[in-house]
Image (cartoon, rainbow, N blue to C red; front, side, top):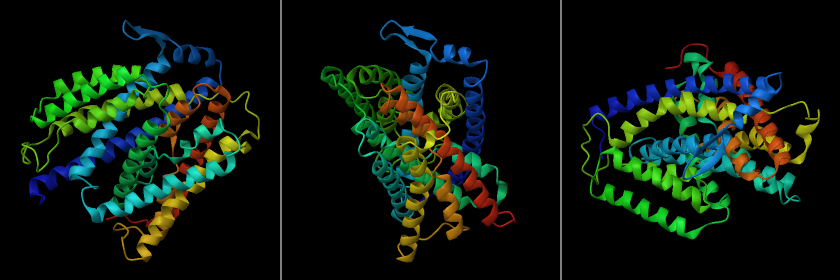
Length: 403
């Protein structure tokens, strides 16, 4: 499908809005994470824990602490948004062209594999700790773009595009990892019912239904069924997002309309996820009480595996893959980027935060000590990656505004 001037203009507007939202959201995440740490290590600690464990309930689901509703409920909306972004990129965005696809996909795969291998090398003798092998494989796009925003107009657009595309592929891999490795105690009747609901949404799509209401109602039912099935409930958001219609040469949606149903929902959800759901998640999950943490706690195999995976595995995997593809003449760096800028991008991809904390919660839900160590590794690795990446790019990017 050849892009029309209308589509190109719309894409440019969407990119500007996306980077503005994500960068601002990243800065909000930094502030909220810092606030959570202050609350957990101050006289407010008791109030902070009471907030996290505030009981809330619905008739069909019983009473659960607020933290559960955030992690299993609101984060399903976050995964819905991630799924919408992935589908849009694959159908009509940065992942729709093989030439555009190769560099970020290979970099993302290398940036997932090497941290997982480094974590495994340090923890292979501990079966319980090995449940966290996927924690250092994630990149937090909002946090990373928030750091880039601190550098102002010196950052080339190509770097922002490459970083966000690597993070999108990274999120897709994380979703697959969660689905394959973190399901527990499957209840097949609920899973079969969930499959029927997903099939109903697919039928709506096949019959070219473009109203969002039936998809969202079925998505809510799907969330309850997936929750009951033993598969993590947030994956209901992924399935729902993939079944929302988008502009495509194989369907009846007019390419000239301002927004497809997918884009309409994505634009509606993005501010809520960026400024409400993710900050709530960060506040509820980043509040690590440091009083009982020993000075050498980061040197234990579990947090050290996460720390090294984020600080070394991510950048080494991404930069090595990018350099190899360029040396072989298979892919080129985006305009405005050289090898030194790629190193800075690789360092920023070591900011795991949201997805890393989420996977840590899945991996060590029944092991509080391991979870504390994992949060320590995630926070420490993400903070150092952000500082190193920012400092490195401040040094190597040209002082004049990037064009």
